[in-house]
Amino acid sequence: MKLKLLGTGTSGGVPVLGCRCEVCQSDDARDKRLRCVLLVETEDSRVLVDCGPDIRQQLLGEPFRRIDGVLITHSHYDHVAGIDDLRPYCAFGDIDLYARQDTAQALRQAMPYCFTDTLYPGVPLLRLHEIRPHQSFLIGDIPVLPIEVMHGQWPILGYRLGALAYITDMKTMAETELAYLQGVDTLIVNALRFEKPHHSHQLVEDAIRFARRLGVRRTIFVHMTHQIGLHWAANGRLPEGFEFGYDGMEIHLPLV
Image (cartoon, rainbow, N blue to C red; front, side, top):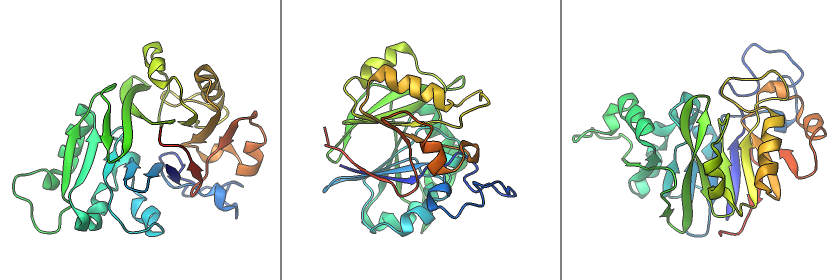
């Protein structure tokens, strides 16, 4: 199973509009962060986790072939605003979207033209599936287990995909969820910045503590703001087994 981080930035991306800090002016490609999207591929299947406003740009460099499913974590703009841009992929057939009930309802309200009995020509052809935490399913040969995390006071979804756990926009997780992550090898998880607590996102220290509780072999941080610092310098502040992800980073894992 090949994983590719198509975006690793927080809601505003990096560089930030109007900012002149050293990160936003950096020439290092690893300091340029589009909004968070994960591409998961096997020989037979292809899945996106989230589909934000940069998705057209993110997919231009990828082979043009079928997308078997899109897993949505929650309905914030930076995670769903690119769904309409998937319409060229409907040449391969309808696209299956998976989301919890409240997120599915938000998508129907935001894109009513995609979810009516009478579709006008050219709209993306989407099949919206409402899913629940802990009810596993397959997309092609990729096993999917939704888990519940708290985005502040809002329950949203993270996903376990075989040996991988992918969690973004988490502040906390209930103790009862930890059992569903036993045996995970690699954790991709949000870490907004080093300092200045946020009401709905983890800081780096929180994310390190969470990963150590799970006992994973490797942890990769995503959903960073420019306040994380220059990529090379920020990575040097992390303990062994932890690293900041960057746009275009690839990870290879066994399917199960």
